[in-house]
Length: 206
Image (cartoon, rainbow, N blue to C red; front, side):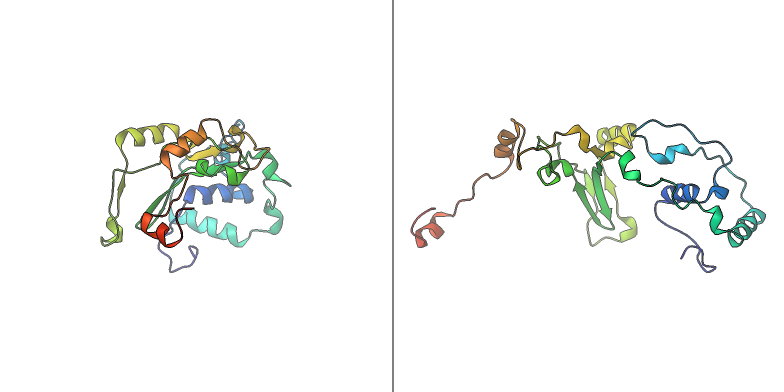
């Protein structure tokens, strides 16, 4: 869609798109050499991109290069045969945003379903202010506290990643950390009881 003549713009994670291009199309990779990164770092940090001159002539050159591109010039398997073996199991830990909806996504609250020992989860990610439905979508805004924003920027991208190797694998289904049940009892409802009127119609409480 973005390559069509009538298209005037493109939206989305363009950094991810750029890195995808560099991996699959060597002819469009940056002129500088790759960086050497350690385990756990984002793969996109391999690329050291410098600012290129933007001109009509350069755009036409890139288009001609695309028209002449051969299948042999494409790296069809840039991550090799099984890239999952080199990537530790991790999940996103952040707020999911879509138009006028913002919901915290906190997988550390469902470690049981992931086969790990459930621990006391982190505090819920909450914002100070958000314009909800009924306001123009283009004016929608979410504001976090200055302390949270500062912490998130200083720790990005690691603040938005939950590494599952940091949690013990549950040998028994439903296994929890010693302090989890105490936390759960205090923050949730371990028992559900009928009210007195409903119970009287059913012969008393269960």
